[in-house]
Image 1 (cartoon, rainbow, N blue to C red):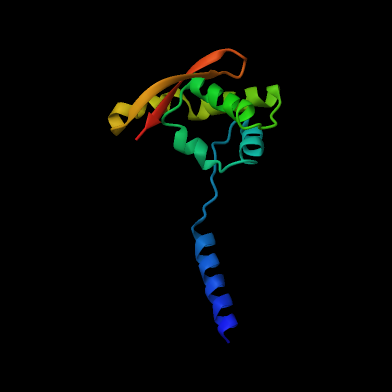
Image 2 (cartoon, one colour; image 1 turned 180 degrees about the vertical axis):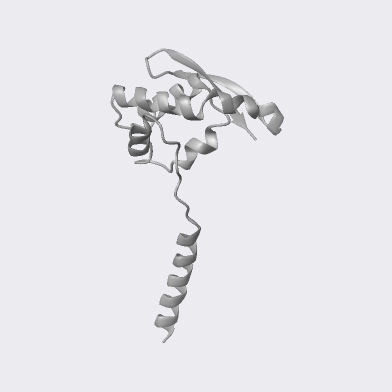
Length: 128
C-alpha cells in the first residue's frame, strides 16, 4: 500500500511539472529550421528570446562562434552563417536599443571573442 501511495505521489508531481513546460515558438523566417535543429539540440530555444534584448549583430555572431568553438557544437560554416543571419534579423539590434543594460539597472562590461568568420568581436556581458 505504501509503495502504491509513493507511486501515485510521484506521478502527480511529474504531471504538475510537465504541465508548466511551454514550447518556445521562434519567429517564422529564413534560417529558422537551421536554428531550431542546431541550437535546440543542446539547449532550450528560450535562450534566444531571453537574450534578444541584449545582443546586437556582432554579439549574435560571437554567440554562434562560442557554441561552436567553446562548447563543441557540430555546426557547419554554412549553417552557422544561416543561424547568425536569422538571429540578427529576428532577434537583433532593434530590441537591444529598447532595453539597454543601464535602463534595466544592470552593469555591463565588454569582452572580445572570436566571431563566426574568424575575426574578433566585442561582446557585452550584462550582469543584473
